[in-house]
Length: 240
Image (cartoon, rainbow, N blue to C red; front, top):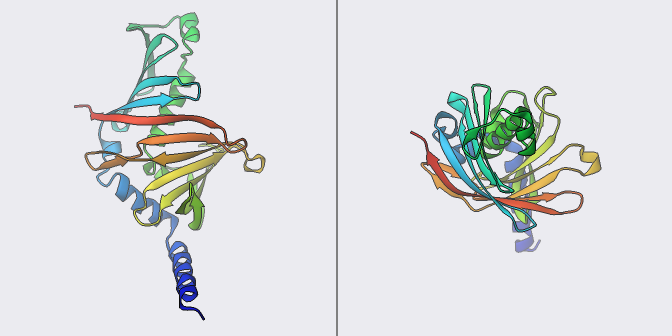
């Protein structure tokens, strides 16, 4: 047998064996050790500054405060000429528009602010920006095996995840670097048989006090391969 072909076969077998021997729990642990080795994301209080660009050329400036330990969340954003500020502290929601607290239902509706939406935004930012740590949350059901698959033209470890019904119904797949275990992207489906949902490419890296987070997230639809937008982390500051 040609030596080069033999080396390719050996390399392929080695890759397959590595993926099969790596448990889902081990993969997540290794990825967390890469992204957040000192558990700062959950134990500290950070402000995240984002530029959120959309296909129409618009860029939304958003500042999000995530402090899971003290159950605090804030989102400060300017959209369509309206500057809104939302806070949630231990389940209590408050809304501010142009610096003044607002409780009037009509004014809140005009600004597209409501408690249900506020809670959704809290969960959205906590989930995406605290990955892969969030994959250890109660109600997370991991596939039994780690597999090897190409994602965004890169060789990756792939892990499927679903959730207990009380937590969520979407089906997720996460992709990790095979050497560093860094999270490289993910995709989700509401109904996989319909090829709905979206896939997300993670690019670049923002580092702050041993925390490594993706610099940008680029969103696309599965069905049409339609570009939806890019979220860029421009700054991260710890609150004292």
